[in-house]
Image 1 (spheres, helix red, strand yellow):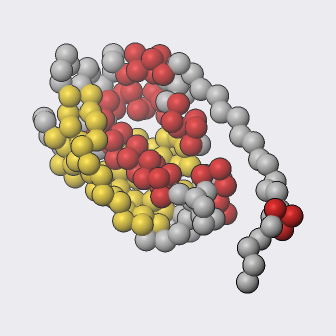
Image 2: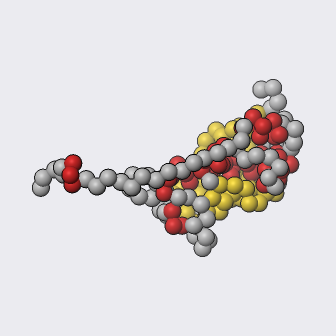
Image 3: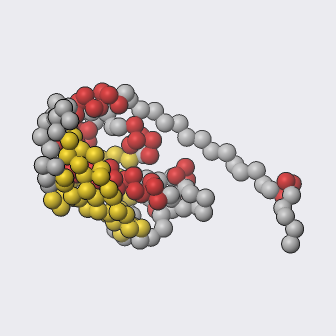
Length: 175
């Protein structure tokens, strides 16, 4: 079998995506004066701009309560990996965001968080035709220094596509 020649290779159809976002420091500033729950509710209501990562990856807040957050996002082929399906990093980013924001809803004014670790189990392949994904994060153990959360990603028919568990560092003001 011979190697393909340049004339055998078909040029791919070029696609384009434009992303816009607001100043992330405006969002961060709005969060510094609210409890985590108030902040997430204000973001869901559109009173606080979404962070740039949400705009870039096309997801947003659907539901918020203390210790529980649901995001929704619809992947497109711009997040495909080389084998023609949604990259696991897209799914992991959605989970990391939902789990972190679930923990955020338990925090008082001025207290922040960051992920220490996340473990994701990918259960099914995700394709752009999966439609809207629902990503839920739930706090399993709040804490003063470390909090724990779990969550899942479901397609429009309710099938679980991935699950995750995470631990998050709680950052006191001025730390």
